[in-house]
Amino acid sequence: MRGKTVLVTGSTGGIGKETARGLAALGARVILVGRDPVRARQAAEELGAGGARVEAVAADLTRQREVARLAAEVAGRCDRLDVLVNNVGVNPPRRTLTEDGVELNFAAHVLTPYTLTRLLLPLLGGRVVNITGGIPGGPIDLGNLQAERRFMGWTFSQYNHTKTMLMAMSLRFAEEVAGTGVTVNVAYPGHGHTPMNRSMTMGSFPYAYRPVVPLLRLATPYVFGDLTKPARSSIHLASSPEVEGVSGAYFSMRSRRVDWPASALDRRNQDAVWALCESLAREVVA
Image (tube, rainbow, N blue to C red; front, top):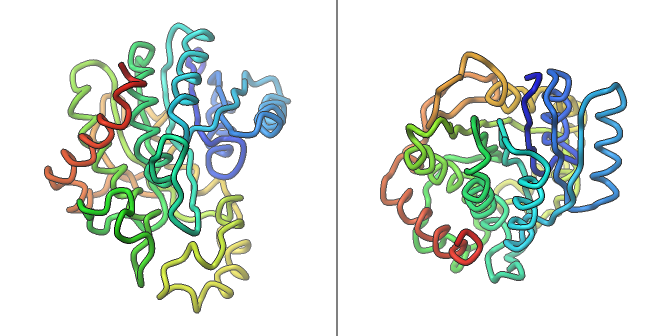
């Protein structure tokens, strides 16, 4: 990775930070992105302490104007971006709208990766790695893309719903950039004892899972405390020669190529999610 520049969103903590740490250790110049400027600066100082090239940019990527500002700042810092890792994530306990009027999960997990990738395409000369998570792969409800009718159910959550929509959008994006030298793939990290997971309230879990939440909170630090493990798949997709030229692929937490869920492969779902992203990002991308 020496001589290559990587941008990792949501990288001041959790899996994003470990992804950035791993890529910096491989010699890449890494640009961290976090909402809190103090945490972003501290993370860059920590990861760069051994001489690695690590920089920080603060941006709230649930806001489209901040996504545009980030893209402009990155363009001012470098003339080429080799890898973009879209890792930023949120998990609110109830339906919340951003300043743009977009449901928060959809904004962070689907719209931001779409918009940021579109804006950075003139700089991109390599790989886009989109990070799914939670329990993706369920149905995509075309009448409920922004949780207009349902945010939480017995086994349904908008968090998992948007992570599945990210997969559908990524497949469509891979098709759009085919032949340009840019690849788009999705990594599933598995579970980790991350700051986001630690901050989740009971209301963030589907009803059927809530009885076991206390047990999960006791076990998670021990079972999922090592965040280097869930970062392996994103590091692999960002750096491995084995995936050079591979696009439109889904990789498991063990860094192995696996089948896409049927809902992500459904062309109607891809088109609907893509059309919504196009509509919501039109002013920023234009």
